[in-house]
Image 1 (tube, rainbow, N blue to C red):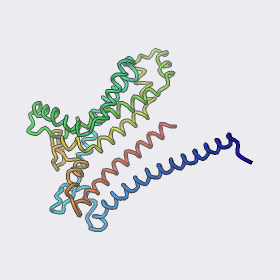
Image 2: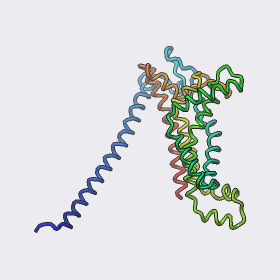
Image 3: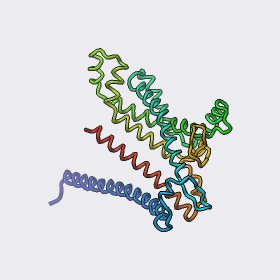
Image 4: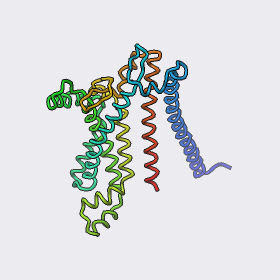
Length: 297
């Protein structure tokens, strides 16, 4: 008995759905495989000096001297520089980003918000190197003239550039979280006689706390992992910074500057530096997952 047109159509749809499911599964497996290959390659190369060559991982983490020609590989000044730069960028970038998001989501007229929001999002599309060029051409000379510095490439310059770079992430994610707060929250607060500003900071912002914290963590990840812009404005000094005007060399900069010519143990130590950097990102992702989980309850 021959199949009817309806049966043939249903069979075709079933086969198409089955094929689509397998294509999606293949894409997911490729994504996971790519991640595992990258992690595996970096970790295998990075742990080799400590497992095979006998270098001390403690000395690597807490050593102050990075002189590959003398087999000295200490990254503690770079770790401190990365942490200082990230924290400084958060201190400046998060309040500005949050207040901008509040303005766009709660206060600004719709016409103005439609102009500012795309402009802020456009910042995310600017190549990182252009931020570095801007910092080198504008911020560095400004700090040299204003503070009377011999060299404007410093920790403070890095902080300012990273703060600008994290703004699109903080603003966009925070604005989305604020707009997701139900209108009934605002209406109830206003009905009780609370002012608009009071409603924003006592009702809306706490209700959007999970999304705002997610924005902060994502912004922090952008700051820790940035390379090209930092290379141009950091100054490349292997010292533990004691003031905002000191030149620094963060972890990402160290890898980018030396990987092109490194070989042997030197190259493997750069991969080990990548493991430390990856650990920071992993911790951030873990924190982000915890924040998201709490927000879902």
